[in-house]
Image 1 (cartoon, rainbow, N blue to C red):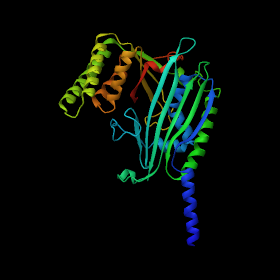
Image 2 (image 1 turned 90 degrees about the vertical axis):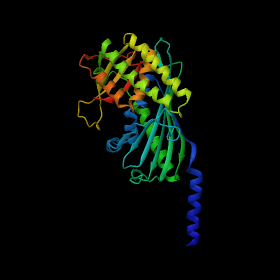
Image 3 (image 1 turned 120 degrees about the horizontal axis):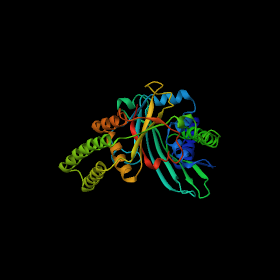
Image 4 (image 1 turned 45 degrees about the vertical axis):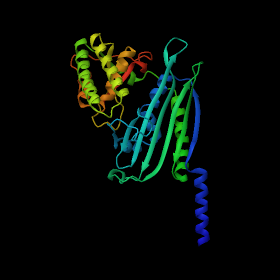
Length: 348
């Protein structure tokens, strides 16, 4: 009996050292000729999560328990970086953080396209239920990169890479086979005939221009909150000069925006989400921006809205203003270019 136990222990030790915790533990690639903007949209939306979940039941189980973290990440709490978006999955003991990094360039026909994209994502699984009680016992930890590079000939090389895994060897083997399926399923879906077509979801997108006085009222409210933030930073001895300078620069940009005409409009489209709790008429809303300066200032406001109820209310009132007249339109690829969009932190 002791020899048998020693053999089991030795075998498990060898398997753990061979197939357990490791960096760069998975990589798979495929090539497609589909539009890089459409591929980027797929890899940062729910469609990827549906493939990862495999069955709708698991997707619903996961999404119904997701709780976004409204607090801004710090050096002590960030799982990836200070730019990450963080979620907790109640009862399942899962913690998820991801960040989107993309770069645009001009294509052969003069149109701006995403040429490099990366979804950097980390999943930490804790003992379920105990995590909700504040007792952290880690089961496994994995970090993934889903990304692509667009070549000069227009083809796109997509890659899935397991950046780091820490946990039992058996879980890593399960993860390997699961992610092999995810890679295969993504390739089949993206290279399919339906992907990237102007389907009814795109055709149903509605667009409305923002009147000047509505825009200026919105900017004034955001400026007022920025000024409060700046005042608090100046009184806080722990705040560095870099943070104060950044807020001051953002405030100056908002002042410039209030003096000009809005190069911005509101677009919304139906949400195809089985987990929506707001009924079949739920829709997502985004603000479409026409120039880089407005985009940068607005993006800052979107970040502030995560933890500032006043700015969040200002954004909501902006996109729900009765003066906005939404009209249906067909969304062309050029109009859907995300270099000039900032998604609002709400669905209506």
